[in-house]
Image (cartoon, rainbow, N blue to C red):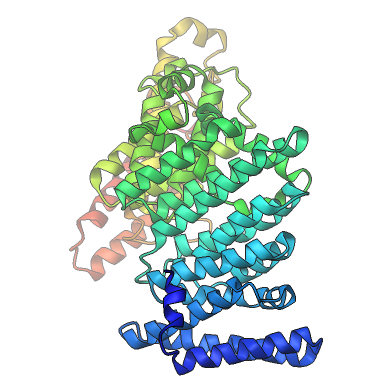
Length: 596
């Protein structure tokens, strides 16, 4: 005997009798064609149900309130299942009750089960296109609770299977609503929300329904819906990586389930990590509406990169995707432009604020795996780099953030190693330009100091190469110009000035910018001594004008500032004393150098 039938033999509570009375009134008014009074009666029902659900939700420990909510919900379900219920009445109730009933799902597991059944009943008895709109509207005005969303998602997964025509267009309308709600719940979870596992199970159920619809379609419609399915799965992969990461068993299972869709969607790990499959699916789905539509699928590239990382760290995930990760990594190691594309995709993981640090660590490990310690020796200087420069610059910026904010020393060190390898993979002609841009776009004194030291290292290596070429080639050009003036040119002095005489004017702020100042002084002294002893002037540092500028505009104001601060603090500042000694040392070097 069903629970509903059993309840028929027990005395009904006053609340149940009241719901029964309102439902009876709704039926009579709707069947009688009194639209105004019937709308009032339906509104009365909604308000009464919300009063009951609110009472149960406001006091979670009140067992009586939970039981009342369950009894009322069972009464609604019983009415919808009754053979005597009029279709016109059910259609009228379907417009408002799904959202109201979904609130009951937050009361208890049993209420969630009955709420599922109520919405399933509406889906089974009402027009699919109408129910699609109704459920999407309910989701768009949703409460940020997994239990509330869950029955609405299940209802949509069943609606998709009931749609008879224009499948792609209707699913395309629903997907933004679905992923927007999942995004809010995943990235801004409510305290005490314990139903997140079940929510993602329902999200996978949506994917299963879209897949089932796809298998019944052919031609261009199949291609479009299959591409939309792929983008949806990638978005869910990204959101699940944030919400489910610490639930290891559930997360592993979910990632494997999502990966199983990739073969059908014709998605490969190589296409994901280079971004080519994401671009292809986006073009198929959006056409000319890319900017508008893809705003709701803003994490598909994150999901694409994470899919490969999950395949690399979790047993069975790559197998579920039917992928050979070893072959993918070998291809990336051997092809520079494809490796650049991969770096550009991995940046989405490094810059994803909500993502757990451990996943960022796995992404750094993957980057180290596809790059070589001696990668600069293999860098092809003849490749047209210009189209890749914005993406690689953004990737280096993202890795820089990991270096600065990672919670442990090991990850910071690994990230710095990865940063240097990505930098070394860039052609020399552009490497120094990117370094300068990174320095000028950094707010951290310590990071500016690190980047200036890297620039100094680039100059040192280039100087060694020039020397190793011997005197013959140098004599051929009169030793007037650098054969490859990528580092040794006038622009390097701009970096020194950027730190010692900031764009906003005046000397740098001390001691907060002490690290950057010290590195800039070291770089300037290195340039000064190298050019002087090498009898060259590639950077123009030895010109009378630049020597006077360095003394009057950089060193003298800085020394004045440092000595003044030291006097105020009673010389109790080792860093400032060190900066002052550097200024004095460079001033001595300036006096000993003859301008050119």
